Amino acid sequence: MANGKRPTWDEYFLKLAMLASERATCPRMHCGCVLVKNRFVLATGYNGSLPGQPHCEDEGCLVVENHCVRTNHAEINALVQAALHGINIKGSTAYITNMSCTTCAKALIAAGINRVVVFSDFHDTLAIDFYTKSNVEIVRLDVPDRQINYNIDDYSSARKTEKSK
Ligand SMILES: [Zn+2]
Ligand SMILES: [Zn+2]
Image (cartoon, rainbow, N blue to C red; front, side, top):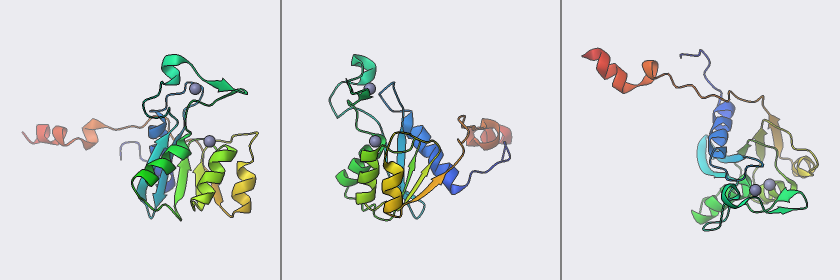
């Protein structure tokens, strides 16, 4: 591989969560969440407005007690996506770019998530307490590469076709 480092499964899915976070619409924070079971991606989410409602980016944040409340958080949107598609996520792992808020932690626990992989801490929250009491394993990884390298010369079939001419 071009950069000589093949990501582990945890790094891979956490990078997918980072990719999901690129779709977030609240400038105060971009979060992504990917729900995975047996190495299958079951659902993804990012923090964003309700369908059909304005985005923070367009109309500004809707701040209540110092938090923007316009968006559903990434974890909730991943749970909603699973619900809309009738996917059983019990026993899956949540890959999240930021440690959950208390509310999202409780929702993930109630939905049967038993492992959380995250690369950042979020203070002033009871998430870790709730996870711990419900025996949810918390894995903290270093921030994965923020740059996802795709070396076209190495991997592109177009390039190989070019070469074979
Ligand atoms: Zn906002
Ligand atoms: Zn949350």
